[in-house]
Length: 155
Image (cartoon, rainbow, N blue to C red; front, side, top):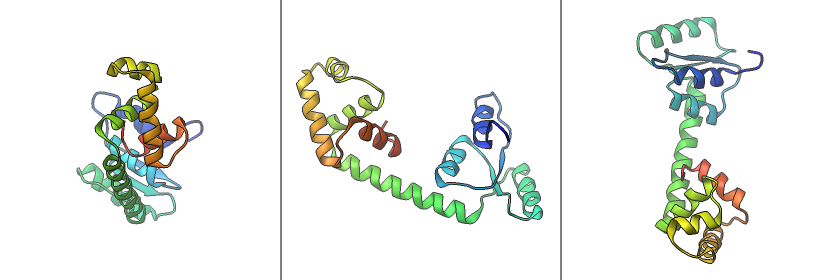
């Protein structure tokens, strides 16, 4: 579809009161897109290269209340979810509860000063927390921390 893709349409449809049963017809299905689509409630996924017969089977199954996932894409997405979940747990085990709170606030876009005010601590203490977080996670910049927080659902 020119100008918009199926996932964007699904996002829009799910914001409405009673979203329809959605089936995505796509040329390519990346793991992250499949995961997001599942979170949005998409019920079926069909690759354009698949036989028309499979599209019809998918539509019938979804219409009947079922779900249709292209097997290889679903397996890759599930493996990615498991890796992400394991990495998220690993990160959570590395960081103290306060450091996880700092990560969440950084991911929300708060400055060191705002974080310090929220916790009632000095700006320097926030910097120490961030230094420790960076060391534990093997990163160097705030933007990397935000990306990790987004990727591993630490927000």
